[in-house]
Length: 164
Image 1 (tube, one colour):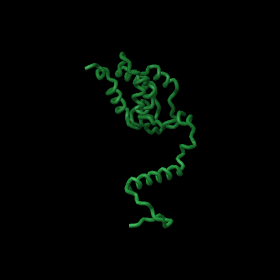
Image 2: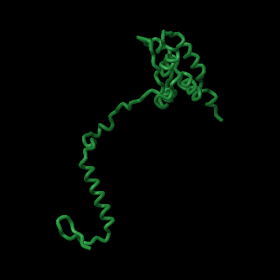
Image 3: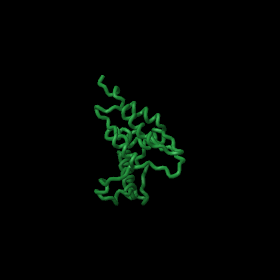
Image 4: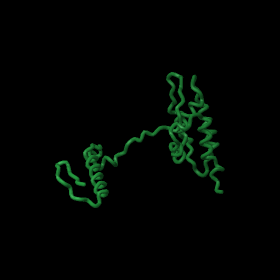
């Protein structure tokens, strides 16, 4: 059997036709990939090290609030932040929740359920490793105060940290 290229000339016999085919196909793919704009050719090395926002979402779902002009006063946020939980060896998760309830109880807004206020403020009540834990949870994985409280206690209850 005679083989010919598009110009009509005979091609020499190739004993390793499979290897030749794979090599030519890989070359063709590389050539086509080089022709396509990838967007990476326009970037400088410093662009790869530049910080960027990752689109982080809160693990706590924001409940809808029907009240007009609802806002949490900076003084309340400050009170919550003065009693932050950071998972230290002498910190008690139940005591932290008691203080948190006490602070949240000082704030009452018409048409705003206390659960919504607690969920909005809870992130401010955590610090260091505890805050990292909250941020590590999947986005919108907490949708109620009971769920938030339970996950917090499951993670930071003192007896859960005792050596076995």
